[in-house]
Image 1: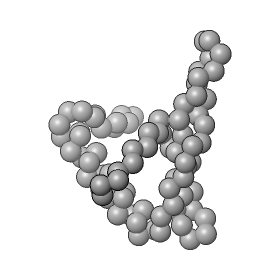
Image 2: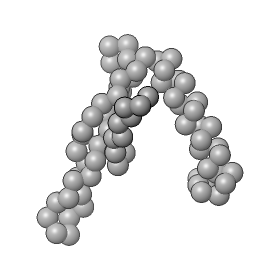
Image 3: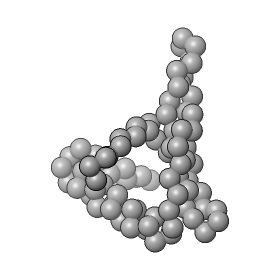
Image 4: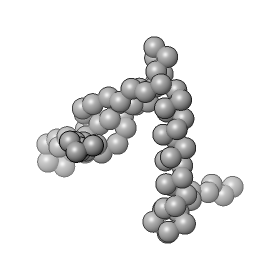
Length: 80
């Protein structure tokens, strides 16, 4: 992968399942007039088969667990 390309996104705008594929729409925040909150603007989509989505989800869950263990993230436990 000598020609790696980096793409930045502020987050995901939408995840949906269509045409037997999982589709991630990524967004960047675009500035508005002074004082107004930035608006998310869709800028690219990643499409993968369900098995690829499951593999990606498992990888992300493992990373989340490591970040919690390192103290970078905290579990959000709803106490009622």
